[in-house]
Amino acid sequence: MKKIPREDLLGELQRLAAVLGHPPTTTEMDEHGQYSAVTYHSRFGSWNEALSAVGFEPSRKRRVTDDELRDDLNRLAEKLGRAPTSAEVDEEGTYHSQTYRDRFGSWDEVLDEVGMETTGSGYIPDEALIDEINRLYETYDRAPTTTEMRQDGQYSLPTYLKRFDSWDGALNEAEIPLPDRSVDD
Image (tube, rainbow, N blue to C red):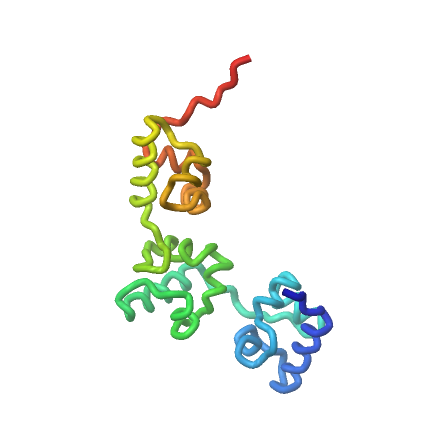
């Protein structure tokens, strides 16, 4: 993928501002601009930095609180009768899904933050991850290694590392004794 020249990004920001009669918001850029607001965030560090780069005053929008994000996600989940997807949040939510991801991490981590589980699309409950560690523990009659999880496990190692912060954290959660890693001299 070819990197969009900085001048093109700034030119598009100025063009859209001229059309709108004011510096665009991230939503306006996403809806009417040639490039997404996420692209500007990635290249300039923030939307306000992109605005400043063309001489506009930074947006003075109030930062939405974590509680407001949680409340809106819960409202949408109640309406849908299940955890919403990021696309549904973009369509029907008050805040963009990228706001949630910027604050909490991946979409699974967003849902974890508010105590929701997805009903499909790849969410693996902690219990299933732990059951898989226990299956390999019984297979090897000892704590499985990360290599063994990669080769023989049903779920990817990065899933465990993200969910439990480390492989040892996953083993601890499964109540499996940690392997002796001492080195004899």
